[in-house]
Amino acid sequence: MTATTTPARADRPAPASVRPRGGASKTKTGRRRSWTPFWLLLPSAVILIPLFGYPLYQLGLLSFLKFGQPQASAGEVAEFVGFDNYSTLLGDDQFWDVLFQTVVFAAACVVATLAVGAALAVLLTRVGKWSRLLLLFAALGAWAAPAMTGSTVWMFLFDTNLGLVNEVLGMQGHNWFYDKWSAFALVGVVVVWHSFPFVMISLYAGIESIPVSVLEAARLDGASTWTVFRHVMLPMLRPILTIVVIQSIIWDFKVFTQIYVMTGGGGIAGQNLVLNVYAYQKAFASSDYSLGAAIGVLMTLILLAVTIFYIRALRRSGEEL
Image 1 (cartoon, rainbow, N blue to C red):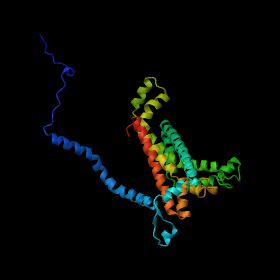
Image 2 (image 1 turned 120 degrees about the vertical axis):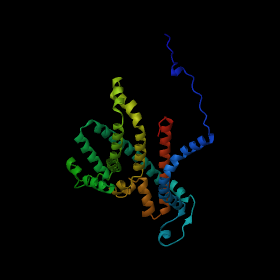
Image 3 (image 1 turned 90 degrees about the horizontal axis):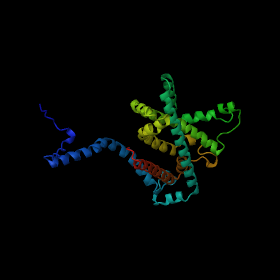
Image 4 (image 1 turned 30 degrees about the horizontal axis):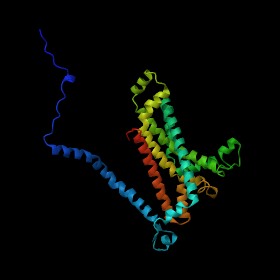
């Protein structure tokens, strides 16, 4: 008895591609699909573009005018001065000093925030239910506290005469805000205290979304804890890390409340100034609103450049965003 065998599917010749009867309809369908994301984004764009675009336009316009107290209160006509405000700003040595301080302070805060947030996110995956709930509530309390309130509470803790820290350390009379670096360090601690819950909860959610089977397979292959973190967890968490890093850079670069409240507007002789406080002083303390607007425009451009550079670096490494 001879059996009739059917050739395996892999041995069959590849079917010829079926040409669609209506080439125009395929093209039309493709176009509809390509435009679908833009239609979905349209309602948000209608709200967000005027909401953010118009203030940015006014900020940019003001930076090209001579607009001070006479124009604001006496009704004098604002004069168009072109790039004079930017020339004045870029020729000021104090601006470059403040910019350097801002970059270093923001970088230190971002690194510290990521380290604390990541460490606590891993801790959340290792502790029991009640310990996890307690830690989450404590972190959410720090996150929900307004920057003004949190800064004031920390000032009480480090008060020169009545502060709990000085009492415990036996350093009555020590002023933590007199020295430039101790003042920056203390403000940085408060900034991290306000920022780490966002990093912690984001990374904890990312870690929990990783399939357990993937981690178990890596461990069965003999991978150590560090190897699992480096080659399995970190690549899967990278999209979340991208968002967290960009958000932290933006937050920490434009810190205002903590510096202004805890150092009394920038510290002794302006030793603790950052760009946001510097812009406020120029605009409102000196009544030079155009110069303050120019600082705001430069801050926006710097943040855009950092964000674009970071995203391009990630795309070059092959990461999908």
